[in-house]
Length: 67
Image (cartoon, rainbow, N blue to C red; front, side, top):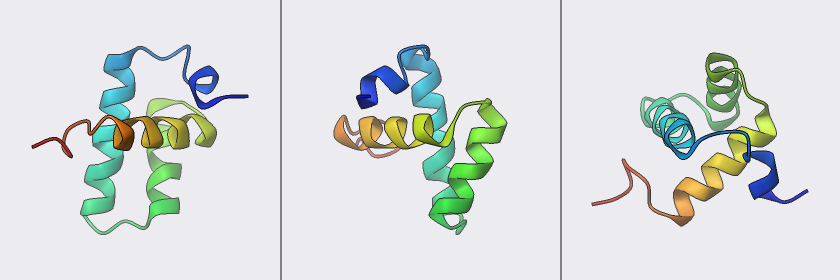
């Protein structure tokens, strides 16, 4: 299964919101694995979807990465 297939049921706005929450959690000092677990529960998505969104956000320099 490709990363795109894992997130196909999530709108881009939702994926961006997930990414922003994930980056903010990690920037606040929460470890990567725990941040993924927390955000997955918060947004009611799977860890695989979180990981796919994380990769997509990094690849496209979504905020807060974009300058």
